[in-house]
Length: 167
Image 1 (spheres, rainbow, N blue to C red):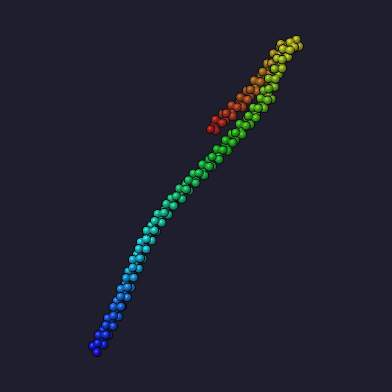
Image 2: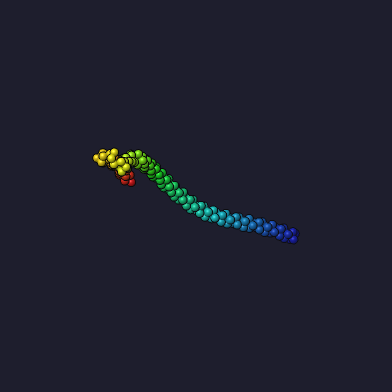
């Protein structure tokens, strides 16, 4: 009977030891699990903090890009205006050059050609035309040339003064 009692006690003791081992294993696993969760929580917290810093940096970069884009747009618009103004000025200069070429080819060359023709006639036929007639004709042509040259100069001066005011 004592033996059975000892055997029962031993069985219960072994059963209790097995339960204790299971409980220790559960507690150990739970502790390891808590440590892993704590470590993971710390890592996630650090990553979240790092992500917030990176997000602020990206926002700052985006703000700077927006400002730079606005500056580039303003410069581009200003440049377009300058190109338009210079193109208009060049077109005006081209009109003046065409006008000058017309004056030179038609109005200025006409009186000069008459002066040259008269001088040639005077040289060739001194008897046909009087000196007074030749000098009068030369004087009229010279005055006509002077008027044309003054018109050209006035036209160019008006444009130069206008161009100086714009700049």
